Image 1: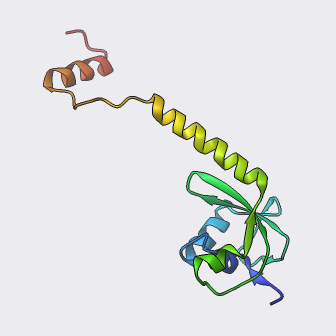
Image 2: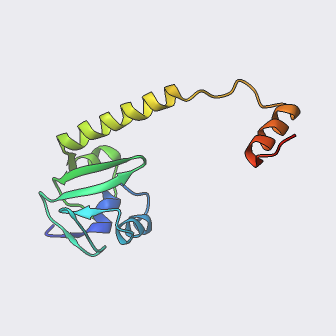
Length: 128
């Protein structure tokens, strides 16, 4: 196989559930091919670097193989390799998110009627 469209490759590599979602992400400027925005019809080449958003993280992957058919996850994983910088950045950001969530304290119960009135009064700046 000589070349594959970018949206097809992202779909086959299981970054997106449908080609339509891959196309939407590419057109929205979320996916970068070799450091620049790309079109959906861009031909993917082996060795290229692609930045793909995945939830909270942005993965930077190197293309190892081409495919235009969606197969099982282990076979899809063989199409690319995540760079070491990307792995380190993802782990750093995950740790920061985990620490931030630990610091945030959630209330033990919902405010009662008097507390809701006090909150409303405080937000509105009322003097009663």
